[in-house]
Image (tube, rainbow, N blue to C red; front, side, top):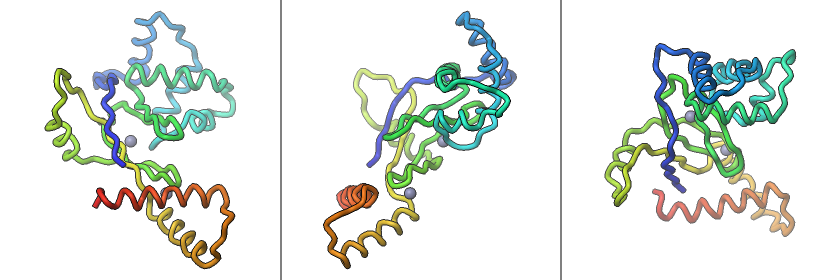
Length: 193
Ligand SMILES: [Zn+2]
Ligand SMILES: [Zn+2]
């Protein structure tokens, strides 16, 4: 399954500006209150590696600093708006990643465990540039390739073996979920070689 999403986000950050400068300028323009909480969240997300949910960001906050979940959510949205973070609306979660000095890129995601990897491949842009979009000016292309990682593939193989042996009728919730993934995987094999 391959999903291409065209979406508008501001990614241009002047190199001379620090993340603090960018946030300050943005909040001044929007006449927002420059609270220490917002800057503390900014400091945390600028240090983080990879892709994280709002709850994970909440867990990364220093213990001495008490911020509500609501403040985390609203500040993350603010940081996406001013181009300091990328957000990824996936099937089960919204994930955030640092955008400051990180070029836009594609991703592949395991539907079994939810792990997400960065993908740098210019051929995706080349295909997107050839795709005809009448009366529509293309800006950028975000691709998410869904599949199954090698750990989950092994898990799936073990599950199939177990099912064949036991011919069981009752499956656990996770087994049912993996059986569904296996079904989708066999359908995808027909057109994803
Ligand atoms: Zn996996
Ligand atoms: Zn990424």
